[in-house]
Amino acid sequence: MTQCVGFGCFARSPIHCGVQQFVMLRFFLSLPVLAACVIGQTMPPDAERQLARDIYKELIEIKSGYSTGATTPVAEAVAARLKTAGFSESDIFVGGAIPTKANLVVRYHGTGRRKPILLLAHTDVVEAKREDWSMEPFQFIEKDGYFYGRGTGDDKAQAAVWIANLIRYKREGFRPDRDIVVALTADEEGGGPYNGVQWLIKNNRELIDAEFCLNEGGWGEMAGGKRISNDVQVSEKYVVNFRMEVHNRGGHSSLPVPDNAIYHLAAALDRLSKFGFPLKTNEVTRAYFQAMSKIEAGPVANDLVQVAEGSLEAMQRVAMASPAWNATLRTTCVATQLEGGHAKNALPQLAAANVNCRVLPEDSVEYVTGTLQTVLADDQVSLAVSGEVSKGPVSPMREDVFRAVSRLTDTLWPGVRAVPIMVMGATDGLHLRAAGIPTYGVQGFFMDRNDIRFHGRDERLGVTSFFEGQNFLYELVKALAKAGDPIAQ
Image (cartoon, rainbow, N blue to C red; front, side, top):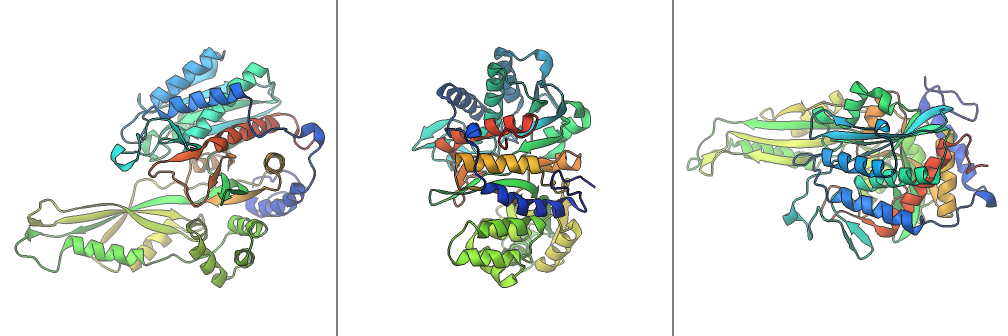
């Protein structure tokens, strides 16, 4: 079993120790930070902000859509910047499964006293059509206090920050006690045969092997302009795509019959739209809701306490109050693509849909499949898993990681707590966890939790949020790369 670092706790199960540690770590949030380690500003110096902005803009304006774009130009552009900044070619790797799907890995050398830390971000983005946006999606636009463009939130902000901060470390002569490795990878959004993390693990593990990894998957929650919490991802749902199909002999459209493939599919999808998987918690989500009960105000705070204690009635109220909380409390399945028919004047011979499920770690593929078959309730609707299913374990709650995140969060944003979460989506962290590299989603980019535009129209990230996140991650990596925890000294 994995060892839980600190508090004399060794794993019976990693998350059991993790929750126990989290309760104790809450104590640290109330401790005063010594004057010697108080960081006076939430923003980086002007020159560092400009560097990060320039890199951010360059990355956004490279069309690296999962299906129609390429990540190789991103890797090559970043490699050129690193070489200009003085990084040796021998410390920069560019390569991948195919020529258009390159990854970049760069190593910043420390003393080698401890194992490396890996900093991960993906450079592919979800497709974006100009006609769907109010602006050009692959143009970096600063407007009304936001940076707009596909990938501004998912995940080129973190990619830009990792590179800008690494260049800053080199310019400042920072000498860490472990190597700092940055990996910018391909095809996180769609996975598949060219996924950069999977490819690196299989073909070049030595390039990214690390004691632990920092990745996307955590963020700062805001509501009504107020910072609520700085979330740290320690686990995540996993993804299962199902293909639903209805086949029919068809015929001429002038002779319609009730036995229509599209009608069968539509009725099955309607039943799915009205169904919800059972509400429940696990050890990570119980810790999350318990922590949020100390942060939220009003009646919902009491509901969150009850959710952490297992009250189904409270779960129902909380799920109705927030799409994010609903997704935290249950497996979800939603139709995302449709196809059907072969001619305007013919009865359809095929109707099909993709159903995208985000599955709780404790729910099996077999359970989800069986449940869906019951819900669809039509033997003419076939259901099959589409593509590979990948699942990773929970990361242990490392004392050093959570202490550094907690104290730095409280220093930069007094009173804001660091909270462990199970992310509702999925990240490449699951591949690293499965390969034995614990991964923590943490960014320090604060976003309105009711206006998250990842994968959607007019994706954006606040200007202040981006630069504050840059400063947060700069200090966090320095803290975790030194012997001991300088934030705690």
